[in-house]
Every structure is written in C-alpha cells, then in structure tokens.
Length: 481
Image (cartoon, rainbow, N blue to C red):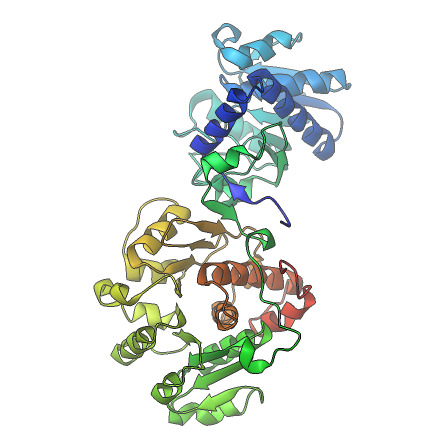
C-alpha cells in the first residue's frame, strides 16, 4: 500500500486501545508514546519558546501532561493549565499528572498570558456537546491573540466521527492523532481546522484491525488498483464508453468524453441529437459521434454508459436512463439523469445495482433522496444502502459509498475544482475506468482522487478543460500492480 488509510470511528479507536492493552501493552505505555508524539509535533511546528499546555479531565489531558514533561525536559518554558482538579483525574491520566513536577494552574484566560503557542489537550474526538463556559472563552481568546496551536487527537470542539464543529474549535497548525485517523479528520468543516494531521505510532499493532473491521478509508492509491493495458492488448480490449449527449449544453458530454478517453477507455461514443451532431463532430477527431442512442445502446461492445451531463431534465431522459439500466452494464448517472427522478426514487431504485455510480452534488442529492440526517459520510452511506448503487457525494470532502457500507473520503482535492464542467470531467473519468472493467466502487474512488490531483496540478486559473490534460502528469501505473 502507498499509505495506511483505514479510518476508525471514536468507538473503534477505543476498541483498538482495549485490544492493545488486552494483548499486553500497558495503558501507561500507550499514553507515554502519545505524549512523545505530541512533543515531537510541537518541536517540529513551533519555534522554541513559552508554550501553554491546556489539559482536560480525561486521557487527552493525560497526553498533555506527558507532552509538557517532555518539552520542559528539552528546554521549553511550559505553563500547564487543567480543566478541573488534579485529584479528580483517574487511571493513566492521574499517573501522568503525578509524573509532572511543575505547577498546575486552573484553566482560565490567564493560562495564555506570556505564551507564544498552545498545546490543546482539552478534549479528544469523543466530545459530544458544544464547548461553553471557560473553555469557550479560552478558545475565543486563543483566536483573538492568533496563537499557533498544536492539537491532541482533534482540535477541541471537533466531533471525531462527523467533523462537526461543536460551537467553536481552534484553527491549528497541526493535529496529532494516534494509530489511525478518524472520519472527523477528513470531513469538513472540521478538516479545515486540523492543519497538518500527524498520525503517531503509539505501539498499537496493526493486527487489531482484523478484529475491528474498519469500513471507511481515506481515499488514495493504497485502496484501489488502476487498470494497466496488456502488452498484447488493443483498443477494444480497453473498453468502449457510450455517453448520451445533450442538444443544448453540448460542452458537458464533450468534457466527459475527453476525460474518459484520457483516463484509458479504448473508444468513446457520444450519441447526440440530430441538431447537435455537427457540434460534437467539430471537436476531438478521436471521438465517435452517432445520432441514435437506442441503436448505439444495442451494441453490447459499448460496455460502460454515462447519462446526465447536459442531458436536459425530463421524461425523455428518464426513459433513456431506464433503458440503459435494463442492459445491466456498468453505468454512471450524473446531473440531469438524477434530477429527472426527483421525487420519484421508487421509479429508479429498483433498477440500480452496485455496478451503477450516482454522482450527485448536495443539491442533486437532496432532490433525489430528500433530507437525510447525519454527516456527509452517514448521508452517502444511507443513500447507497437505500438505492443499492454506489453513491459519490461530491464536495470538498467527496464521499464514495457502497451499498454494503464501505466508504472512502477524498481529502486532498483542490478548491480550484469549483468551476463549471469539473463534475462532467469527473463523470468521464469514472466512465473511462468502468469501461476498463474496474469495479464501480473502486472506479468512483480512483476517479475522485485523480480528479483532485489533476486540480491541484493545475492550480489557480483552472478551468474544466484543463483537467483531462493534467491527468498524464501522474505516473501512469501509480496504484497499479
């Protein structure tokens, strides 16, 4: 694998701790290692000076006590403040507090006086209520003074499972978490508060994952394998994508077609209405353009289908979607193909399978699925479960969910992707990978990651036309066997 990418919920992380301790690793050893990880991150991210270490009443605070001891030993001026009383601490946190020989002040605004930086060890990922009282006041003062912050586990106020900000949370230079990331490290808006996320090895063996069975992953090449052309292959062996083109918004299908070809589909056909055929044929010479969608669909060599980009909302598109799904081939439904079934999910869902990828943005998602509570991860999973299809919920934290509950979250997409036509390119990338017989869930995940990487490669000034052209900048076999 290129990187370790399992994501553990808060409860799963508690279980990982418990399994490690049941396997003979003392809890105090885990906490010592966590404190070492925090101290290393502080030394890396902050200039040496006077640091305020803010400790909470639980194990997060215990990690803070360890970090304070280590930093002081290395010559830092440390001012430690505790929310609550030392006598009320329990377990390993109490043990680490006893090893700290410096002063302990009660948490207050004065905790920040004459300090150059902050270690936030107040609350970890399990916080479930909004910050208030003295903690909120201290957080507001940290922001007002613009103090650099290194957080322990998550910035206090960020929910570890959802990324929700519970009232207030600091903007951090870095966040040190342990063993594996949590969904809240990857989901917005909490992800924007993390700074660099450092995953510290604290001695929990990777073998515990087999018993935990994580189903969420940070998206990246370690989680999927890109198709590789065979040495004796030919264009027909690389698949043939079919796109339904619209008559007015012709750019959408053209962007998707170029993306599908660029990512490796051997052939791509656009079926266009008669009045727009000349527009499609005046573009890329390598694109096949036909007039009759039904005739094109009847050819079984066209093994992957895309409907929706610029397709025009209405009954005509809905009927063509149902005809495409009836073939049982791999299929991407995007944009207008989704909105054409708004309020009529019972008409669409019985025809879906995990060979179909739905690619809504939030507005299209709400029109098709209605209000679904929870985080973006929970919403995408529920939509996939309900529909029976792979759901790619687009956004700065794109989530791909399989009906089984398996999910990926893309964390490194460029904000410059927020431009017209970007989603059409993403749909084309998925189509091109499906045409090469890639599994639909993996194709959607790989396409989302490559789309983000292409956006980052172009950067400021990006328009959708740039994305397919940026794709060859990446090593062709990255993530491939």
